[in-house]
Image (cartoon, rainbow, N blue to C red; front, top):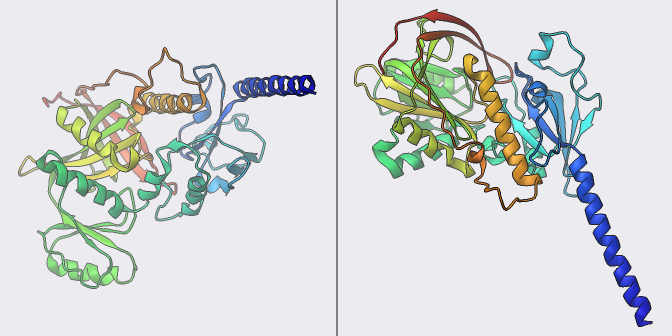
Length: 401
């Protein structure tokens, strides 16, 4: 009897090991599925083509806009099932005549999500779909909790206030007031001022208010919206700054309106690449620590004409737009960042490789110098919350920065 039991145990132990080994081999052969939520102009099938994990496990991409997906999540089995439209609203695909690059299957079960479009815009609200992704616990870039927070401006500004209180003048955040409704909306700072209604992005829902009389008129309009308002002083800006961070890669841009619009992110503007200074690096690094860490972000700031001082206006998350001339390279950085995350999740740790997280894609810091070419950008806001741009290169005299 003892021999029979012993034999059974050995047999079960051997089968268990075989099953475990077989499962590992199957998982290595099965591609990792990455869902990219971006309906505007970038083709992520091409960007990820030929890329694999460090153990040579392949990557399968599915790309769709928020409007192209239905989200189902569950607490058992595979946590997330995405239903996909066969005819997807991908801007880049409409511009070319090719065989459909995506699978004809109407569902996919992603292992990872890259979100590059706004969830909540003036035209569309996809927060219910985001809730499903959060429910499933699927890993993503940026992290889903931060993407949820970025749906509302005041939540992000509250995080920036925490940083400003800690570092003072080392993080020069513009002064701002918040009003939950039109009643009691008594702005006490200087005029002119900039009033921003609700959650809008890309220059929408924003108005310059010149006097307290204009503010009274504006307040009567707010009464019809049933939403919150933030108000901050308006400074005549010599130019805007955008400090971009993707993993460990940095870029700094100077943006100046050439269409006469006080909002430099609308109309036409000239874009120059600047050096990454220690100050700019500090700002974006501090901001990247918010809400569990931001892998992709931009810090927008203003260089004041009169005082020469610079003020941080806002921070944008994973849906931040890319400069047209550097977009191809920056999308490669984003792809490398995704692969770094996938390796940390799906590849067994190698004792010879030291993993340092999202910023371990490369140890090199990209530093850009001032160019002698100005990129003229004509921006238009799409229904996906992204900004499209057409570019024209104009020669200019080199400036000393």
